[in-house]
Amino acid sequence: MLNYILNSTMFKTWISPYTIIAVSYITNLFIGYKQYESNALIEFNHLYRANEFIHYTSNYVNYFFRIVNAERYDYKIQPADESWFDYILYYKDENNTYPLREKYQTVPFFYKRIDFENFIFVNLNIYKTWEQIELNNVRSLFLLKCREKYICKLNPKEFSNSNIDVKPVSNPFLEIIYKNLHDDTSHEVDIPKSYFYDNNDILSCTFLKRYFEYKVNANNFHFSHNYVLIVTNFNMEEEIITNSQYIHLGNNHYSIENI
Image 1 (spheres, rainbow, N blue to C red):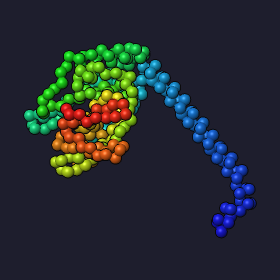
Image 2: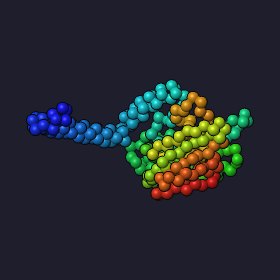
Image 3: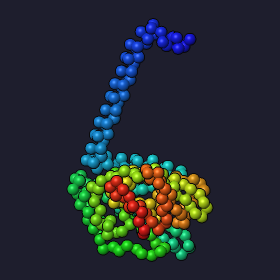
Image 4: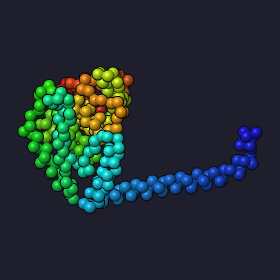
């Protein structure tokens, strides 16, 4: 009976004009909303870059909501500032535990991009004189958050030569699984796309330790440096990465490197 009604000439004659009008109205409404949203976002981004008060107010409002959530679920959060340097050490201390130590340096607001770039360049140059730590119980990572992107290196001299205009690369992995060999548990690793930039060093032991400390984890989660990563790429190939290896990202390729 329902099929008869839907296929009847009378029904089609009655419903078609109203359907077309409704669909057209909803479509125009949606397009108008998306255009308004896009224009508002462009205008806000302009003010965020040009106005110091709006820049810092936006940062700290966002930081407030992040810190409330972090206190609730017991995880770390990054600084309120949009850009910063982070020097990270992961090592074995006198209590036979492996803490993560971080030293942040924030990047202040600049009206002109050239001043922003000069500040980054001067501070990157400091690392030219640093030597990479080569101790079994100490691992390091050098991280720069440059607006919307992350630049991460294991070697300080390579970090000092970082290009802040580096190009993004595609995520080559379908799945990344962290397997704790102490308790035989497995946990998915979901890296934000803001880390996928050419020449980045990701998925080292220090990188993973920091990754898990800055996210919500299961109540029984415990990070152990005794682990393997099981990565599946887009060729459906599984590869194993140990705690003495990491991924080096390239343009349309990646490589597994030894630390």
